[in-house]
View 1 (spheres, helix red, strand yellow):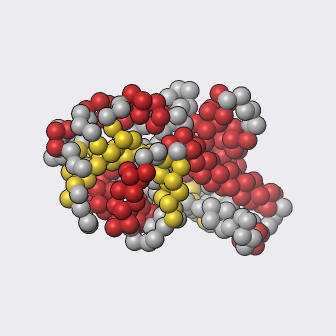
View 2 (cartoon, one colour):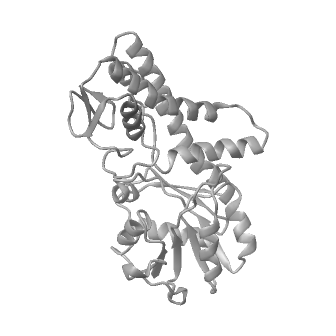
View 3 (cartoon, one colour):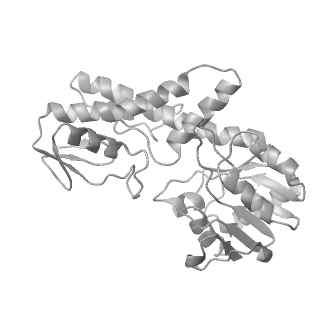
Length: 316
């Protein structure tokens, strides 16, 4: 079997590398300078679409680049959409491009550990209605993954909602831990032991349950806003996700004020990236804190100061 991977960015490139361990892979991208194939006349037996779906002003994701790809695929084949979509988009695209068999198959990976996370998923989420196509995709994963995960096979709409639900539950968990952390610091105690103890309950768990910086990066903030917008369209105004977003934004201010209370001569930052192992500064809380401190006249630098910040929080 020959696999096409369309889109060779920070996710598509590593995915192509992984598939190459067991399959012949055709890499397609519109960046001619990097030497990738740009013609869609040389597609494999199955194609994975890994292109951006940027957020619009209304917080929804646009499927413009995904659709640009689908327009160029003229032959019948299975097309696996890895890019994150708004609920209902896979079904809309399937009705429009009837010669294709579309599968929605988003990943749950983090920048800085893409290959490890892709090879070792807790589960594989598949949104599809064609069982034969599902079995082909399962076979590919069974041949390349380093573990033996469960497969959650849902309808495309169900999978689209599941992708956003999972990420938004994590953002809520992070934000709640930070709120408890802020309370602990007000009381003059450290939150680490408290959250670690609570996280021992199997209903909660310790992953993403530590006090420190809020969430950032290219996925969590926009997924949170996208699901909130979608729920509002369906006339569900619980307000939870909106509150999570607002609390997350104030977390950088909370930490900056805590630093200012210590009256530092200088503040050093290990990095301004949103997380360890990545150079991405999109929605980075460290970058927000850096800007706040600079506005307050504090000497800030990349490197150790008398107060030092890393990706978990303040380290003096």
